[in-house]
Image (cartoon, rainbow over all chains, first blue to last red; front, side, top):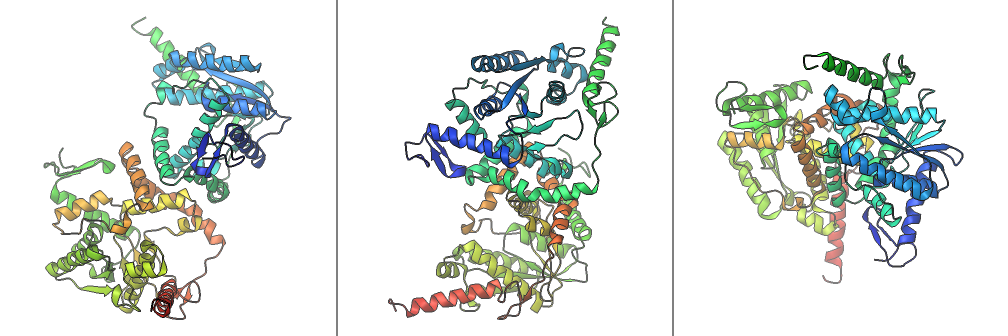
Length: 314
Length: 314
């Protein structure tokens, strides 16, 4: 197969785009896709200060890389979750990436936050699933780091497969409120929120993997050990089968949703007027109750730990 | 496993309902499900004359059987498509079913209609796919038979798997107009349409197969040879995988769509006011253009056949 742009030998074949690319043209294709997503959805400008949430995986490091290439003012943010060797290895990849390129990186270690909030400890003391605890903790750290650091935008590496799987999950249960809000740009609904953007939302997992490989990005290949059996993976598998039978299915599913389908939900949800969040009575960050979900989780951890140390075993 | 109702030995286990049933209780479960679907969606009453479209497969014969059991006034309608041995065997099953039970059955042979409309001939002379030709022909025959026979309702055997696959297809492409209309009851939009209902829409393919087996219904097991590779089967496969990972997925996908999701599309579509169909200038049946899609297809067949017989080979 030949490169669709320059007729050189193609290194990658994209069935969804019915196109093939040599290495330089593929990198150009990928960058243009990100540029167009950013411009088309008004995600950010070259003047914005962008905080990039990085996990050490291919998507977030490819995102950071391409944003730097495109001239954005970026700082990386890594949240150390304390999930054994997986977290150690992820952090090494992120630190190596930033060091090699001379990029600014912030690291928040959950074990040092509040009463000690490493994901496995929080999950064990509250009996929540590690993924639920991790989601609450990470969201809070992202939001707080973005606002206290004076950033304009928080960028995450969610790709097309992530967005399509999330959309499928929302559709299978017809979660109309979630469908009304699922967009690649989330406008801040509170002064302590910054804009959240997903510049890779139209690029597949395969496409970001190829980009990361071609750019020589050294990323952590293993998945988080807690993700085994996650529903999201079942959705991704189903979508991959649909994609194999009809290339382009994932792309049109997400794109046509944003172009056409979503308007119906947005209009429907607008009817029951959305309430902006309050300020959390404990930490001042946005909260839908009196206290934000992060502070509720912290309080639960403190309560459970106090009970245990005061119990019969102490 | 024991029967959820009577504690006898269960013969069937329904993971989606987290229940097991012995034979008599399963038949009761199935009938109640159909009764509730009919009542809940106002499909028909015991006074209505119901035309049941039967193909010889398990779904339509199970539907006819259960409607008779529930006391409805039914007549069967079989459309002979002329698809070789498959059609011959299907017709035998339908005739056997009606004869054994002393039920009224109408047969329309497409080969005897208009200029001769057996599906393979129409597909060959118009170069349409057999499934597209068959759809247009069957819809017309169903509608015409229902209105000329003075029926109040046309019932088809579409099951949960059919409805879920159709819904998934509409959602993957975000066909908002189709989503606005996809319901188990279609109200007539023209005096020559009758109400169309799908009483099995909440019962899975597996559940109708078990019902047909337990009731000793002799149905054609083979699928239409033209269905090989159909997109619908890819959707069903994807949904079956989601169902295996999380039993009840198909049921909640269709049910929650009707309960919540669809309202958004219906409101959205209502905005661009729906035009009722005209009368077809050729046959008088409902048409969205000047001539209905059936008469357009017939005209195309006639034109192509005339050209061929007047061409150089003649």
